[in-house]
Figure 1 (cartoon, rainbow, N blue to C red):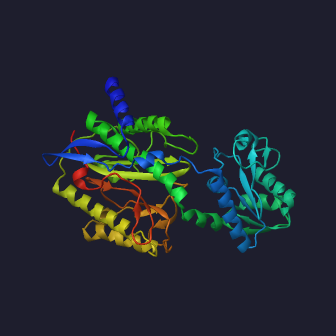
Figure 2 (figure 1 turned 90 degrees about the horizontal axis):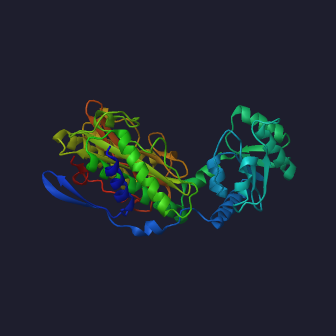
Figure 3 (figure 1 turned 90 degrees about the vertical axis):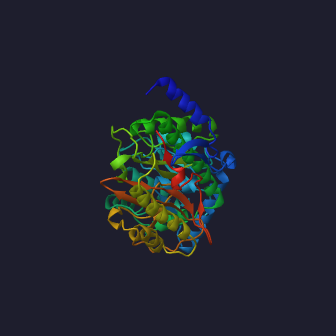
Length: 433
């Protein structure tokens, strides 16, 4: 790739307003202007939740603990530690835990190399061990300290533990009553409040930008490889985040460069790893990017046609889009997760493409890219306001290619809220090279 051209692209892409982009495209032989609806307030939303939010969350956990008659809850899941305390850390083989007592502030049990970061946050009560594995199993070490704090004979809520981990927990608190309570935090995480949703809106500001950055790169450089698209978009996103984020905790661009960008026949691989193929006219192209701000993930995926689509490509695209729109329309309060999935995928079945179905309609999204509940067969969860999901049905012909859009969607009372602003109609998704 020409270095000068690459620098010019990055300056242009990084400087563009993520949700106010105008692009001149040729669609069906005519000039078409793509304009993404401006949403500049997203640029001014916070990058992380404040300490007071986590203090309130601890209070909510303690209310549920009282209902379940729990004296304490010990969290070993890194995502649940972050969700309840806001303590961001690199999760490794070194066990790290949060103790939430029935009243008062939480305590953290951390490896010593994390202790300096604890001192910067609102949770001031912590104990640390030198390193892993150590002379005593570190899970046992954590629960010995829980016992020393007066919970040795108490009723302690724990998360789902393997047999090996449970053995060490019992060695640490041999006289305690251990109660499986993993669902306590999991189900709290299902419902996002407006503070959490604002963090996700902030993330979507960057995620939508990634799609446009990838698109602009393809338009500027033509017959490129998947790795070139990935790297260009990731560089543009990294530059934009570096320039605009006020707090830089809990952000992420997935390796090697972030996202999935399959084209041609490989667009029929939902999780295609990059190849050295080069983009050509007639290809389907999927740009699939996520962004993570303040610990919360969002995703935006868009399918494109390189040049005017064939009649067959249009049929595939229309089936995918009908499924996508049906899924969004049904993500509302009171719906049953698996019924939303069926209504969505039935659009592809009705179009005659059932054999090209490879996956469910969507998944929960938040602190983890994939989390419960699932918009899928077998999940009978009743949807509630504030739940957040991807909506990403796809259609995949292994002999031609595939199409898939993904939106990040908030369940509302009568109509879902789509956080994405990037267009979805076919006439807006044509790239001439």
